[in-house]
View (cartoon, one colour):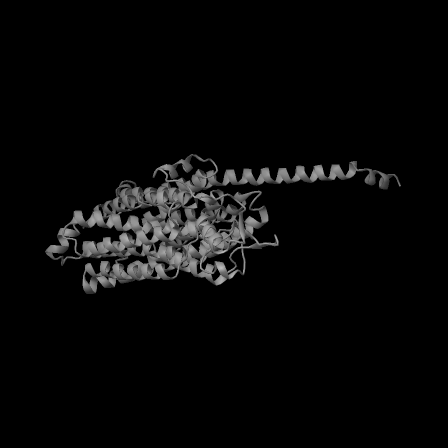
Length: 494
């Protein structure tokens, strides 16, 4: 798909498109490396809006909930001064927000990536402005849910965009870079939200989000081109009537679909085990993140909000580095096992490294249970982050490779299940932790993750084994054909 053709300088094509010139020589479409990297950088920056906005608002709520100097207005809006009420509110918002990407999958194949993101960002800007002037908790909840749903569309569309412009053999590292801002969002959010809310009040955080998202929207309109294979091909044919594009894989304009149709992917036995392991690790990571500040603000740690915000940084750094490493290893594994012969092979490094997640849960839970030195919980927290981050590039690359023409839909199904489970676990985290105590609660989460990792690893092993058997049979039949040939027999007689 890679070409030096200037006529495609404003568009990015699918890795499944080849262009035929009048002399019938084949040239790959779109070799504009700088353009691809620009699209990747901007699409990844879109995902930062999601986690940054969630982390900013969470830090604001925690700050106001702990403060004893609430104004009448703040009490009427943020009457969530117990951790359990605050977590239930965050969980409800997360689950409501991640329903909206299913609506995006209705229009994504029919319109295009760029228009979908522009509409989503516009909704986000408007909802953020309304939140600035919210006068009661009902208005705030409704428009925060709309805000979260709109920005979550960027994660779905971004993965679809990466699938459009990067071939399978290079997609792991590209997805890893795509997830970088998403992973460091929880680190940046508290560092921005805490000081802003303390210095200028809770309204200032929504003002910041409105300005930030509006700037992103402007850049989107100016910089990012269309990437959907069908629209790029149609534009190219109109601009170059003497040239013809042939799809390596069919990818035509799809009709409107039902919003729940992406959930049908959850019945695919080749997909559901990997979505399940992604879901359990993400849900337990969010539960750990939620309780992290609660534990550190209590005796014997009693850290200030500023110190707690800084203690999130090692986890963010660990997620950043491990995601990049996992994406690189994913591409290496895909090349080793053959991305066409055995696409599950790219999952081997991620599943092997994901075992660090349950190990981290055990360390994290029991060191907090016995209130040991902060080094113990930090090590556990870092391992939890690494174990989850290594799965993101590999599983996303695998899902979009399995469903290339419906990358947005399968990504929406994955994100929906992930975040619904995370929202539910965040809501029940504190009641369960109080009932079971910290150590046993995180031991339970560890057991759930071990089971999900094993269930994801079994089909990967089976597919690799089957692939090797097929190769052995093909090699054996080739050898038999050579030995049965007359020339070979004459040589052996001689």
